[in-house]
Length: 253
Image (cartoon, rainbow, N blue to C red; front, side, top):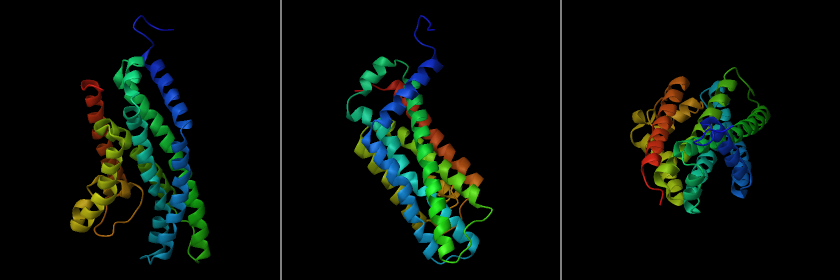
């Protein structure tokens, strides 16, 4: 049942989320990135297995934290979800069909969050399988009591990177520009700052996400997992809120 002004907000949101998931499922790029992500994480497991570690516990945490390497792909998936609307000039039609711009952006975030959560979970399972086998083959303990927390943290950080990608695409609009900026900020920029100013790295988005996923810093200690998680969610929340405000106020052309 609808009101005189259109469908109820929750009904409309549900319809839009299903439509976004359908579009994602029909995209070849979505499938390619979703398949590569868990394989990429499984390959990264080799690094902490072969590199010397201070203890078996540190080695195990490093191995399973590789599940968070899927962030590269969820970040791109989030960017493509929104930037593709501007690239293919479908954003105007989307807003005509859904006059409530906030509802449209919320649907993008929810759909991307669900998709990225699925990718993150599958990546964590691949990491768990590959990590346990490689650790056992090399004579190391395969599991510890910290493994569930490390994997959950990796799944959460990877999922939130997808939401961050959607928000960045709203702010920048240009698909290539958003991907390049994301790479500079979250792959190279933060890495350079971690080398230049190690004590600052823990407070940056990448440092916070690494803390949440159980990774270790090369120079300088990271925040505890709960602290890194709260800080990273705060970063994502601020960027998402800014993206929402700009969507409501600026012209789409």
